[in-house]
Length: 168
Image (tube, rainbow, N blue to C red):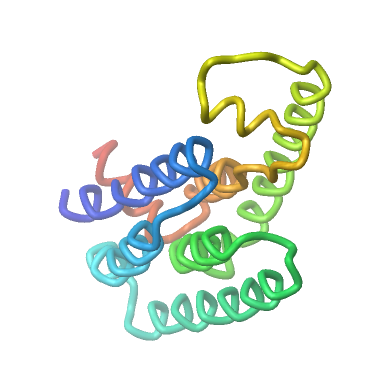
């Protein structure tokens, strides 16, 4: 039960990050910090050994370094980099392939949708939507990050234990 409650933070925080990114093109730092902070107690509650938790932490740190390089190269924003790294703590190396694949698929679909909508020159009185439809605006990539992370959740040992607690 406690594992399920701790693991509930994962989808809730990712969905919040996606919503906030769509509406403001920013991801609050507290979202990434919370994702990272809840990981360790969730992993212990899920029954991971200290060694397994350590490997998840090493993997998350490596992803953070890689994402920092991509941020420096202007590939994506700092909020995106931090959320990807925090979600990687939960997925670990074992679930990284579905995470990256889901993120890439959703990112491509999001980019395609934005291209089509931006070419339609839609007029709206919603400021967040008007900004999102500007051709020079970026994409709220936390949507793709959340999709990929949620797609990878069943392959994560921590999240699989949390889901097992819900179905039990």
